[in-house]
Amino acid sequence: MSAQSRQSASSELGEFLKSRRAALRPEEVGIAPHPTRRRVTGLRREELAMLAGVSITHYTRLEQGRATGVSDSVLEAIARTLRLGVDETAHLKDLARPATATSRPAPPRTEHAGSSARQLLAAMTEIPALVLDRRSDVLAWNRLGHALLAGHLAADSPDTPATRPNLTRMLFLDERYQALYPDRDEEAQLAVASLRLVAGRHKDDRALAELVGQLAMLSPEFAASWARHPVRTCTSGPKRLRHPLVGTMELSFENLLIPGPAGQRLIAYTAEPGSPSDAALRLLAAWGMAEAGKSALTGLADA
Image 1 (cartoon, rainbow, N blue to C red):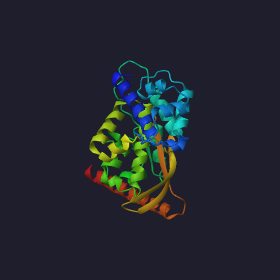
Image 2 (cartoon, one colour):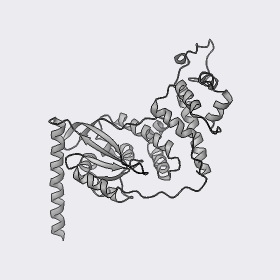
Image 3 (tube, rainbow, N blue to C red):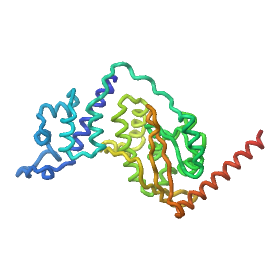
Image 4 (cartoon, helix red, strand yellow):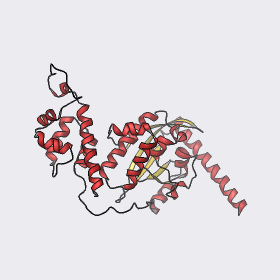
């Protein structure tokens, strides 16, 4: 890890701990209100250290990113005191243990969906599906996945890194993609929280750092949300979409990790059989087939 990356990781750790200390009121952890006005919001460092059974010196060094070799037991005691969830605890451990490699990080490698993943997508003719990398770049999608999420983009846009869509970037910067989500604010918060988890695990990912920097510069909303340091992951659940062609749909999604070191995943969307949303997906699939037929005829005419 480069010196700059180590400094950034230390800063992230301190910001995360401070944000969680500030969110916890003293009375929530059994500390009686002080008769004089408190100068800090939430728990003080010394209060957190006392409750976690950690020396104030050790905790201060940890929050300043100067502690090394921090044990799981110490991190878990701090997590319990701060009432962190499972995702937040994992994130704390990721930030507290930056990579130790001193060599220069390798240049970003262009990722592509594997042939087997593409074959699987093509076979899923009635289910919208796409393959994403860990940064939420779209590496591939099937016809219905493209029609559902980004019919305003070229179908082959994931094939070229320069035009490859990124779902998080689109959620903050693409008005047509934003319009798909009636609950767009909630969707945006989850996207930031998921990106935080990934950033904690992959501190030397230059492409990820560039994405975060770009979004922070171009979207005040993203910058404000990122500064709050939310942490959360979501691998399945409901998704409500308002499609410009077929209307509002109530769908379920599954986020499936593709085996391998790259962290790619397949996301598929389904609707309750026989529901209005199921009918809407079938209508969208028929529209996609018709558009594909038109494109094929145009190609033959131009040949």
